[in-house]
Every structure is written in C-alpha cells, then in structure tokens.
Image (cartoon, rainbow over all chains, first blue to last red; front, top):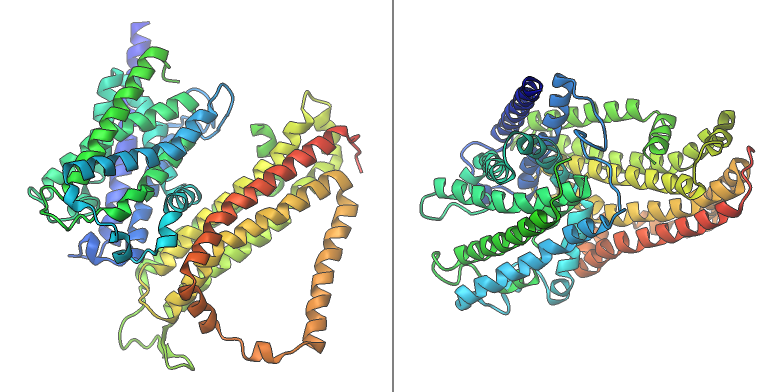
Length: 299
Length: 258
C-alpha cells in the first residue's frame, strides 16, 4: 500500500516538474522574443504590452502538453480533471459572484488604506490627467468588471495552468500551507522576466528588480490562496479565471483619485502596494479560516 | 449536459475547426513577429489617396483581425441552426428523448453551446487583434483597427441577440419552417438593400468617409464606452429570457421528428 502511494507521489512530482519546465521555458522564450531588446515595460506601446501579455496563455498550453506527454487524459470535470466544467449547484454560484465582485471590494479597500497611509496622494482631479472624463469615471468599476469578464481568456490561460494543474499536484505532494507558499513562489518567479522590465512595480524603486520579484512572490502567495479556494470550492477554474481577470483590470474607483507621483516614492506608489498586500493578507486569512472550518478537500 | 455539448461540438465538426484555428493563430502570430512593418523607407510602405503612409504588412494583419470577427459571426449564425438540424437527422432527437433527458436541459445545452462559441470567437478575435496591433504605429491602420475593436463587443452582442431569436425558432417551429422564415428575413433585407441601391440616394455612399466615423468615435468616447459596457449586459439578459421562454414552450410541445 505504501509502495503504491509512494509511486503515485513520484508520478505526481514528475508530472509537476514536466509541467513547470514547459510552462517556464515556453513563457520565458515568448517574453524574450516579444519584448524588444533593451526596452522597459513603460517604453512599450499599450498594444505591444498587450501582445507581450499573450504569454499568459502558456500555463494552460503547458497543462495540455503535459497531459499529452504523461497520458493523463483530458477529463473535463471531477478528480484529476482539467476542471473546465462549471456547476452552480450547492451554492457554487456564490464562488462566481465573489470572483466578480471581490476584486472590486479588495481594490477599494487597498486604495482606502493607501490614502490612510499617505493622504497627500489624494487628488480629486487625478483621473482627468489619465484622459478619463467625469462620466466615464462614474461607470469605471462596471466597465472594468465587464471588460475583465469578456476578456477573461488571458487570465484563463494562467489559471488553467496554475490552479488547474499545479496547485492540485502540489496539494497532493505536501501540506496545504506549504503548497500555497511553494505555489505562490513558483507563480511569482514565473513573472520574473516581466518584473525585471518594470511590469507591475515600475523600475524606480530601491532594490530593483530583486525586491520586485520578492514582492511579486508575496502577492502571488496571498492571491493564490483566494484563487485556489474558489477553484477547489467550485471544482472549476473558471471562477478563478474571472477573479484573476477582474483583479487585473483593477476596478477600484478610488484609483482615479490617487496620484502616486504627488509624494515621495517611499510613501507614494508603495503605499498602494502596502494597501493591497494588507487587504490580500486579510482576505487570504479569512479564506483559510473558512476553509479550515468547512474542510473542503482537494478533489 | 457535457455529453449534449460534446454532441453539438461533433455535429459542427468542431475538432477539425479548432485545430485549424489553432494552427492559423500560431501562424498569424509568428508571421507578425517576422513582418513587424513600419520600417521607414521600406518598399512595402505606400501612400494612400489622402497622402497617409500605409504599410502593406499592417494592412494585411489588420485584415486578419477583421476577417476573424466576420468569419466568427458567420459561423455562429450558421451553427445556431446546424446544431438543431443535426438533431433532426436520423431521428437523433427522438433517440435523445428516449433516454432520461430533461427537455429543459436539452434546450439549455443549445443556448450554452452558442454562448461558448461566441466567447471563443471573441477571445480569438482579441488574440488576432492584439497581434495585429502589436507593432503598428499611430496612423490610418491603427485607426481602422480601433474602429473594428470598438464595435466588436456591440457587434457580437447583436449576434447573441439574433441567436436569442433563432434558437427558439428552430426549436419550436421545426427546421423547415424556421429555415424558410430565416431565408425570408435575409431575403427581405437583401431586397431592401437592392431597392435602396436602385432608388435611394447614392450620393451618401459616394460621400462616405471612414475618417468621419473615426473622428466621431474619438469625440464620443463616453458613448462608445457605454455601448461596450451595456451591450454585454443587456444581450445576455435577452438571451436568458429567450431561454426561459423557449424552455417553457418546448416543455409543453410534443417532440416531433419532423
């Protein structure tokens, strides 16, 4: 019995390593080819940034390739599946609703904390400098949520790999808490080439780019807990994809009233990141408590 | 539900199409990375009648993004009826209902299938659009691409609304009557267009200026955004209402094998 268990564990580890090798290799090759040499994120046009961001599709592509190599099959639902099906039974629709609206609430809370830390960031007309008029600002959160939803394929590209393959394997190989940390670090490191060219945190901060990579890993650990919870609770990667997509569009209306350049770097832009890490940590803590109480097991 | 969706996927020869589209998308991306366009002094840069520089590669990739959304719309419109016709063939529907299958689930599967196809078409369009735009500079090609992009969401929302009428029509009226009705509708539209070409004011076409539309869009950013935000909210609402109505009526209807 122990032998069978050990064999299964070794198989899972091998499969995970194949997946990670493919995911990292394909994405990093893509970044190397798509990003013009010597250019930073902010130097690129918005269109080119979107093109580079197509690299988000490689985790799910690697998931499919890994299943082809390891002959695991392509089951859509159930245990060891790709988790592509979606069900609204047993109040699972709550997961989808939370996935849509939670990033908005978290975003507003993060901005609120940022304003508390450095109130000098507040600028009632900041959104105008971003080329957004008053009317557009009023519907901004809804617009961001809708655009996140309809363009969720890119986030699906990531979640289909990380939550659809990596996390279930990690949770089989190690305790849940360790899986969150290891999974978050892997996910954060996967972003490293982009962090090194200034995506997410810019280039103008002390310890660039190493501190940025560490910061990304911390954010990925915290966000990963939320995304893994909705995936395991719903038995589908779609709520996680939606949550990730809406989180990326940053639907907080307060964003239009915070000028990160108005104050020194230390309290300015970083105050937003402190806010978002605090909010994510609280949300992740709540999720872990709920998870422990309801003890939903890995499928 | 999964089985019903897979049946429809097989009915429209989905596997072949998915593989073709994946290869085409990869090819499109690779070509774009090779032919980045915009190279100053290139022999592929021409001037249009307004004196604006147009790179032929940009124009080619712009056409790609334009093509994918039109082809997608055509496929959705075609598949809406094809998945219903397939069930009529060889009495598949009768066979389906000899199994413990809820009529409501059957109707839902049709609606879900088309909704998935629309989501996939839009996602594919976004990939082609992002690829086409990646190395373009500001100019007429970029303006055209923005125009296509700006209208893509309302356009696909309109297709969803069209399907909200087409699916119940095929379910409730049967394939022959529904096909006749559909053909009559498109013929009437075509006749109206021909009548307008014959007797209408053709000066409007002669004076048609795409720049005016682009300028209008630039000047009405909020309205465009409102349209982009509201259309994906309203159209699924209409689609869902259509499902409720169709499912309710279909439950009462006797299943005929046509």
